[in-house]
Amino acid sequence: MFQCFVSHDVSSKLKSKKRAPRTKLARVKQEHHALMDMAAVLYSEREILQRVKGMAWEIEQHYAGKDLVVVALLNGTVMFLADLVRYLDLPLRLDFMGVSSYGKGTKSGKLVFTKELKLDVKARDVLLVDDILDTGKTLSLVTKKLKKLKPRSLKICVLLSKSARREENVVADYVGFEIPDAFVVGYGLDFAERYRNLPFIGILKPKIYDEVVKS
Ligand code: IMP
Ligand code: MG
Image (cartoon, rainbow, N blue to C red; front, side):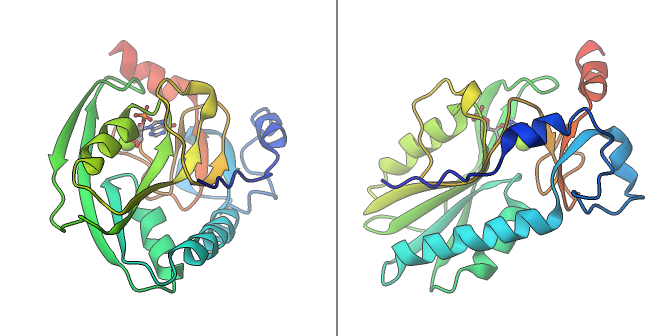
């Protein structure tokens, strides 16, 4: 399995946590309503799209001539998936699985499947797409379930990975950005179903989720 960790400088992103989020580097609309809830902008829309294009190119090299089924996990993958598959110049089929974690605040809880696959993936090449690989509990559960369906191959593609928090032995084959241990939102990622529509990825101010945890 090949792995494609990016050489993005995470430490410089971490330093930017101390700065006001409205940096020129981030190229985020200065007046964006959600900026006040962000401790920092981690990746701007332009940086994300550039990276997603690069990931699509890598995926294309591997899947050319194969029987590709992209299986995306709902709901966090919406933005990433929409951009990724548009950049993938390959014939493919697309299906979704729903898995939700019922936890409070930013803590994950019991995992429950909310939507099952419709396509038959037996003897097909499956690319499982998720927004973020955190503890690895979600992708560990989903890959176990998918392997029972006997795909020809199964690879994992995630936009973000927080390696520092890994609890399960899950290795992603395609990783957009390796990020620090912070709770992030935007570009599909949510906190309490909010912020999914932000075009950038930002670190949420801890006071926002602390209020929910206390309530
Ligand atoms: P895991 O099972 O701990 O790997 O977590 C995977 C899921 O938790 C992701 O698909 C997200 O829905 C959610 N998650 C983990 N970290 C974050 C974060 O920083 N922001 C938003 N959602 C997150
Ligand atoms: Mg989520």
